[in-house]
Amino acid sequence: MRQKVIAGNWKMYKDLAETRELLGALVARTAEIPEGVTAVVCPPFTSLSVAAEMVRGSRIRLGAQNMSEHDEGAFTGEISWKMLKSAGCDFVILGHSERRQYYGETDESVNRKAKKALRAALQPILCVGETLKERESGVTDAIVGGQVRGVLEGLTAEEMNRLIIAYEPVWAIGTGRTATPAQAEAVHAMIRGIVRNLYGDAVSQSLVIQYGGSVKPDNSAELLSQNDIDGALVGGACLKADSFYQIIRSAK
Ligand code: PEP
Image (cartoon, rainbow, N blue to C red):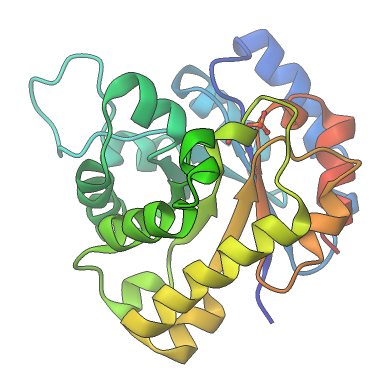
């Protein structure tokens, strides 16, 4: 039985005062996290230390939204795996479509970052997903399949047990337009099939594959009840404790 992992991507929202307010509300309600569900928050870098203090000893786990592919050095504005570890992170989102679209990230750079993260015992959440044009041209499986193979290149079966794949159709992110449960399930099953071909049945069966793209309290239960949907990467709806907890509870 796979864990359901619900991760909140705060994106570029919440200063320190707002971080304290939201996390205060989240930590106060951890009794609502069902058994078998892992809840993760991914605030901006500037909030990580404060967030780490606040979630310590609770059932909420901490992740970052990006990470450098380098260990250290003259890379102005970058954040290393070591910094994320020392700030208290267990997870890191890599290759989010906004990073691919605005900051030139590619499957190759995401793959290099994934290898660094795994060696540092950070659990990567590797994002893949097609654009609207690609979906409408009927190449979703080819695009997403290629991204999956690209970001996993050279990873071992043991490393596969320590990562998450997030399928996030680009056309559904922040648009209010969600993939139907059947559309999402079809891509998730395709991804699991690729992983089965590459790593065998046991690895593919234990892999957590999240769905992301306008997940809200009113659509999460149906999405999360699909066979191959093992969690959600949530943007807008994670910024309020109420809606985040409604999604977390619906993962039961
Ligand atoms: C995301 O940022 O990964 C995301 C899925 O955002 P939203 O839920 O707002 O579509």
